[in-house]
Amino acid sequence: MAQEPLKKLLPEFIKSLAEKGRSPATILAYKTDLDQMASFLQKKSKVTPDQIKSSDLEEFRDSLLAKKFTAKSVSRKLNAVKTFFRWLVSEHHHDYDPSKDVSHPKVELSKPKFLSALEYRALRDVVRGDHRVATIVEMILQTGMRISEIANLKVEQVSEEEIIIESYATQPQRKIPLNLAVKEAVQKYLNEGRPKTDHPHVFVSKTGKPLAVRNIRAAIDRYMQRAEIPGYSVNDLRTTFIIENLRRGVDLVTISQAAGHKRLSTTEFYLDLAGVTEPGKKQKLEEL
Image (tube, rainbow, N blue to C red; front, side, top):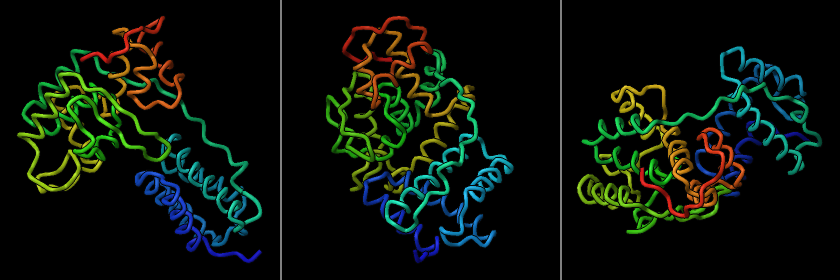
């Protein structure tokens, strides 16, 4: 089998991800991780798939751990590597998968964190003067949206009663009902805080350009520091939404649908964290 170099195959693989509808964030992460692998292999004079053995990929994994990448980050990078080599085999660029028997580093799972009512109220207090960030915080607390969904949200997806999250990657379209708190926050931002722009995204910069995920994360991190709750991240606001609704007796299906969980078991995982022994029966999200 004639072998093409990795530097030619990698762009073809990245293109295939786009054609399959993978999210821009996923595609960028895969490209970064695989470029890192290719650079490592090139230094070992391994430039075509037939030259690569399982031991080479194990060395790549171990080199990342030696550079103090977390086990979770290395595992994610290894997922990209394994997906790439499976693609090589499926597209007949190679006849075997050297990544198949490369094991993932052991990842110590930590429990998700969530804010207490006192803590998320403190965060609300410090963001009150920033319409944009205050609206984002309120939207995650009241709907459980992911930060990527916040960044990609379009004005046309927001109505008086609900938000429609368009399908993306492996996530189907879903609708999230809006309670009074988030309705008021969104309307105030759109009417008073949002810069005048023709751009369709809800959350934009002062120059009218869409806010990137990293910008949203950084802004909320700064306000968490000011609120003196530095141990949390924006993702913990989503967990807080789930925990609070479980504690207030909202049923699993309603929470699961709003959060975009593919499996009900994912939502059930949070029952123990919330200290709830029996799921509730309310079919309406609670206002935090």
